[in-house]
Length: 258
Length: 371
Image 1 (cartoon, rainbow over the protein chains, first blue to last red):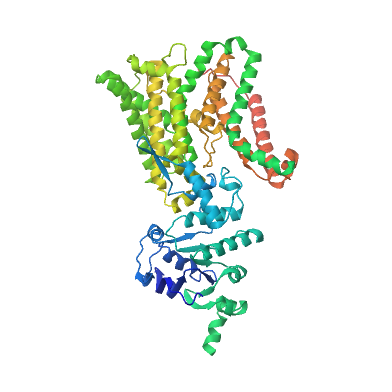
Image 2 (tube, rainbow over the protein chains, first blue to last red; image 1 turned 90 degrees about the vertical axis):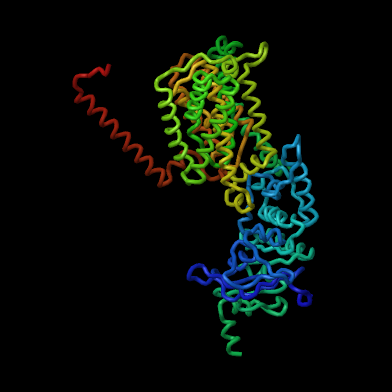
């Protein structure tokens, strides 16, 4: 199904240099609606740099990004969010002392005007947070009053994801190692969240070291190695051996041999 | 069933620990004084003195709650209060400013000095502890340069009213001011961007930055608020004593920090308790008044404030510690190799000191009176 649809975002021939170091060399990436694209690769393969360019944190040295076929130039992460591209980081970027609703709206609080002064609308934020968590992610927190630090790893993840999906424009969600710090049960729940979001038509880019997770949820796998794209494979048509081979470089040799 | 509900109850009570802590200590002081000196401690006039003393610290404790919640600290507030009060005295007495304008100028000057603190910390990247300690020297120096050794006294009625006025049949005016600032502080903390971001910044500065919060700007705001509150305290102190001099208010900073910390606001950031700070201010004033009532020398006040800071921070840190299993009490703790070494170090230092004292007494000559 994914092959048929046009990509929402296409990155073409992206190169990024930090001083003399070439972090990315001629890398392409396509993300499609309703599809999970996994990016795998060893440490230093350029995964993080690639998604930081996609989310506007870094600007490419050369190469183009197209959104819906139009050239896209971003100067900051805020630009990316405005165009519907957001990321959930491994650290989740949550303020543990605030309640889930406050975290969900952190940096974009809802307000109401009292006597001409803008005050935070805590009640509205709470009901909206509850609605987003339940409707979009199917998550019900036991208490919306408790500090975020008292939530489980998966629930914290849900709050961080809800922050991204509250943006109605959101079309591309990048998830950086979402399961790295979670136990098996919480991992299963997070993978479920990813599937739920895929069904809602988001394009999801999943960065993971865990091939288990990648094979469990992804539609396509893009393998990175030493700043280059080794290849992109359809998950159903490949296996662990092939992907592992591509990650460590055996695939390259095999391809050359063919 | 009850097993699963027990931790729930604890987590439900946890937010109130901040308030319960000082409350328990207040009750202990009340009980203690009820036994020791009930007649003199529980007089209406004495309660008025306690409230009057506490009121002076209330605006500062409110502002310091924001500063500390952001993982900051302000050690310059005593000098800010003294300098603003002296500048106000010059404006009112030297240049004939109307009293109300003098008061407003004092608060504005305090805010400006706070702004300087905030800029030193956020723009010059001087750590808050060193930055405000150095600015404390600067502000105190200016106050001494301006006022020399003079005591500026006799102020208009408005200023003495702010400092020690009494609403007939009710509490003193400064108490009303203090409580009003606390109510305003609680609303700001709960219902404004500044309050929300204050907690976020203290809780997780990186996350705050990543979600697009202007971290440095909001830190500057906290120091401006702190400066304005210290300026107001300067006015209140001037009015209370009807006099001001450059060396006034030497212990404001640690007293206010003690009040905020004992109230459950975490020095490690993110955890704020306005009502706790309020209770903390009351507690410290009651404690100091108790020391006075028991005719204990004034200088013990400083010892008491220090002990309160250390013990409350240690207590809250211990309460925060999730895993208290397996520590097995004091004796096992002393047996760990590291602690055994510390114990030997302490023993060695003690033995050396005892040796020096013995030698000193053995070789003691004629004493020289210092006076």
